[in-house]
Length: 140
Image (tube, rainbow, N blue to C red):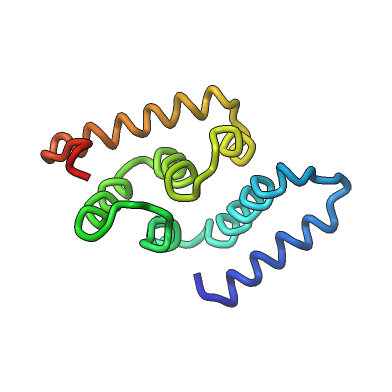
């Protein structure tokens, strides 16, 4: 996302926060802002034919907080990108963005138990794909 568009999304989020009729507790502010930012971002590009490319470019980059480096990182990102959208989002929020299961539940409007189950399923899907290609936990 170009810098100007990112600034516009951030500005929209702050305006929405200031215009809201409720007070957001400090401990929930991060999750609320992240959720609103994602929604604004998705709304902005919903009609774009290259929606998947935009998500890949902006959410699954080396700028994210992942310990894996080099060719392992590239390979892992390619495999994560092939997963269904829900799995990509779950893995991104938990492993790349450092959100807790409770924060993910708030962002996605899921129960905490649903987040845990979905994370387990997402990890299982990724593990199966990686194992078919000869990669195991110790390889990374």
